[in-house]
Image 1 (cartoon, rainbow, N blue to C red):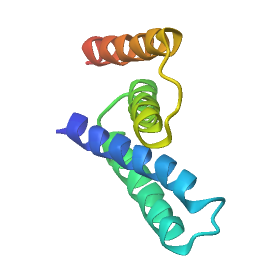
Image 2 (image 1 turned 30 degrees about the vertical axis):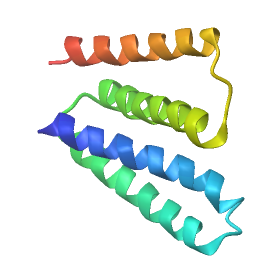
Image 3 (image 1 turned 90 degrees about the vertical axis):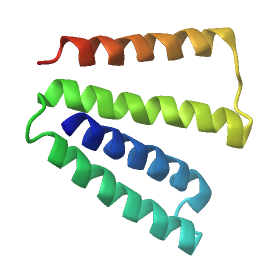
Image 4 (image 1 turned 120 degrees about the horizontal axis):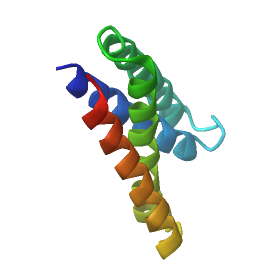
Amino acid sequence: MEWIILLVAGLFEISWAIGLKFSHGFTQVIPTIITIVCMIASFYFLALALKSLPLGTAYAIWTGIGTLGTVILGIILFKEPFTMMRMLCFALIVSGITGLKLLSH
């Protein structure tokens, strides 16, 4: 269950990171409000997950989910570059997250 909570925290992290882009430096009211709500939710769910998960593992996975999600959405929404080197780095992040999850007790 704590892994699902951590996944939810990571999804909210993706949401607030994307929201930052849409808020245009907090000059757009609705995207700014959504961004702040997602930030609070992300930290809340991370705090819940930390009740039973190791700090280093949970934090690395949380930021990894955020990184992966923002890379994918950056490519889709903002036409950011899709290069082999970026995909190699993407694969390394996925393998690191997978390894942390598998080695966590």
